[in-house]
Amino acid sequence: MRIGVFGGTFDPPHLGHLLAATDAAEALALHQVLFVPAATQPLKAGRLAGASPADRRAMVELLVAGDDRFSVEPMELERGGLSFTVDTLRALRERYPAGTADLVLLLGADAAAQFSLWREPGEIRRLAEVVVLRRGEGSAAPEGFRAVPTRRVDISSSEVRERVRAGRDIRGFVTDPVAAYIARAGLYRQGSGHGAC
Ligand code: ATP
Ligand code: MG
Image 1 (cartoon, rainbow, N blue to C red):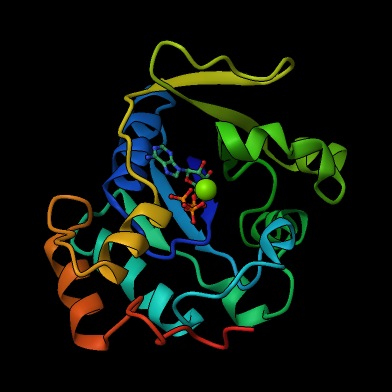
Image 2 (image 1 turned 45 degrees about the vertical axis):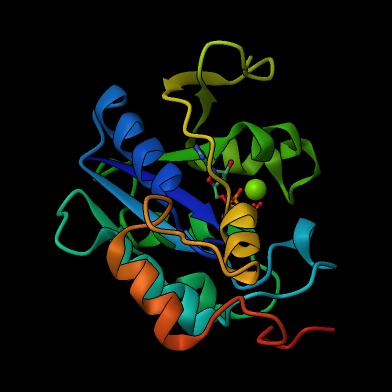
């Protein structure tokens, strides 16, 4: 079995995430892709927080609901604190001992560019095959990584948050259940920041 591991802040999860995971699953013959929301991403730790961990988890659940290729792995949220991918891969390796599954870590190009700053990059590469999701034609993968082409979907969580803050529509950027959740919970509106510092 081949299992993709797709980490992120998912604040909120959007159609770019979904299509990237779909393209990667097909290109890499993955049986499952685990979406792994981070508690706090070490390299994003200084940023203003958006939605709470519970809301981010709920939104990722909604994004992948009903699609048996995808599931949400909440271990980083349950662990809390800074989320280090090496810890997550070690835990997954315990769940799926060597020989039972291949782990394939999916990295967006922006994540790949910072990979050398991550904790124990060598150990990460021992635990999993690291694959960079190339967005469209123009983007090159950093040297030394396997790259897989994914279609270019020019959506970011930042843009979705900005649109909500500006009172603009986010249908078409996120799935309808995620849009409904954001509206119902009042996320990303001015002054609704979770633990903003
Ligand atoms: P932000 O705007 O807050 O940085 P984001 O949209 O980049 O958010 P993340 O949660 O940081 O979302 O992304 C998780 C992973 O998904 C990262 O590896 C990132 O590179 C990748 N990713 C994000 N947006 C896209 C997209 N539109 N297409 C393909 N991959 C994406
Ligand atoms: Mg990003």
